[in-house]
Image (cartoon, rainbow over all chains, first blue to last red; front, side, top):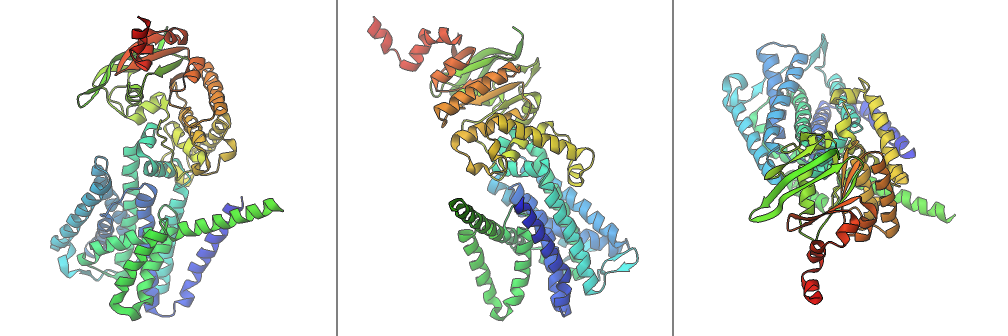
Length: 323
Length: 259
C-alpha cells in the first residue's frame, strides 16, 4: 500500500522537523510561541474528536481547558502537589465535567446544543472568576511553576518544548490509534448518520458521552500544560474569542483528519506573530481567511491536500491506462 | 409454526393519522415475508416500529419471546433484528469496509483503551471482524470496493452495502426496505438469489418492495397493508387474486365494470 507508506514518511518528516525546530527558534520569544502552538495543537486534536469525528459542535470546550489549567495550578501552588498529580487531576476533573456537559447533548441537537454548551462554558468561566479564594478571581492566578517531573526540571524553554512535544505526540498517537478501532468508526458513523448508526447497533448515547469525555481529558491536560507554561492564568483569557480561535484551528486545518488540527493550531498561533506589522488589521485578515476557507476549502487545508493528491493519482492512473 | 418474530396488534398514530392500526403477523425462522401495500399504507412505519425508530402506541413485538417494545434501536439490533433503509443511511466518511464494520459493532467487546493499546484480544477481534466484513462484501458482490469510499458506489450498490452492513450483526431477522429501488434487473435477480440463500441459513427476511415481480417470485408469504390495516395475508398466489388487495392497488372501478 503506497498510500500508507507515504503517510509514514510524512509523519516521520514532520516529527523530525518538530524535534529539530528548537535549533531554528533562536530566542525565548520564538520558543514561547512554539510552546503555545504545541499546547493548542493538543487542545485542537482533542476538540477534533468531538467536532471533526463525532460532528458535535460544542462552544464550551475552552471552559474545560480552563478547568484543567485552574485545577492543576490550584493543586500545585496552593496545595503543593507535584506537577504530575496536577496534570492527572486536571485530566480527570475536566473529563468528568465533559461527561456532565455531554448529558444534555443526548437530548438536544445541532444549534441548540451549540448554544447550550456556549452558555455552560460561560457559566464555568464566571464560576472560576467568582471563586476568588481558590482562583484569585479576575486578578488572575500567578506564580505557577514550570513543570518538574521526578526531580527533572522543565524550567528552561528547550526542555519544556520537548515535554510539550512529547504530550502532543502521545495525544496524536492516541487519536491515530482510536481512528482504527470500533470507537473511531462509531464516532464517524454518528457524525454521518446518527439514526443509521443507532439502528446498526451503535449505542449512540454512549458514543457521544465518550467523545465528550475523551476530548475533555485532552482539554484538561492541555490546560494544565498551558498553566505551567505561561505561569499565569486569568479568567479573561478563556473567553469566547478563544473558543472561536479553537474552532477556526480545526476548521481551517481540516476537521476529521489527524493532521488538520495540528496544522490549524500552528497556523493560527504563529500567523499573528508573522503578521505583527499589520497590527490590528490582523483581525480583518483573520476574518477573510476564515471566509475564504469556508468557500474554497470546506474540508480545510488537510482536505484540500488530500484532494490534490487524489487528483494527481487519478491523472497518473489515466496516463498509465493509456500506455 | 414456531414464531421467531411475533407482531401483535401494533398501532401507531401520527397526530390524527392512524399509520398502523392493529396489525398482527408472525414470522418463522428461514421464512421470507413480503410486506406490500400502496404508498402510505404503513409498510415503512411498520419497519420503523420493529427496529425501534418509532415506539408503537399499542400492541407488542416479540423476538424469541422477548418483547422489544420501548427498547432502543441499538438494543434491538443487538437482540437480532437488523434492517436497511429506503432512504439510504450510508456513512460517507467511512470506507465501504468500515461501513460494514459499524454493523458489526454490537458484537464487538473491546473497550476504548484496550482498542487503542491493542490489549485484551482487541487486535484479534478487529482482525476477525475485518475478515467477516470482507466475506460479506464478497457475498453481496462488492468485494472490489472494500477500501473505496462509498461515494464510488452506484445507488444500487449502496443498497447492497446496507444489506452487508445489516448482515454483519448476525441478525435473526433481516428487514429490507425497498432493496430493489435503483437497481437493474440483473442486480435485483442477484439480490433475490442472495435473500433465498440467507433464508436457507435460518435468517427470517421481511421485504418491502414495489417491484411486484420481485416480491411474487421471492417470498413465501405476503402481508398486505392499506391505510395502516392488514387487508390480506397469504401465499403470493392467493394475494394475486385477493379482491381487497386488487381494490387497494387499482381502486373500486374494477368492481363497477364487472357488475
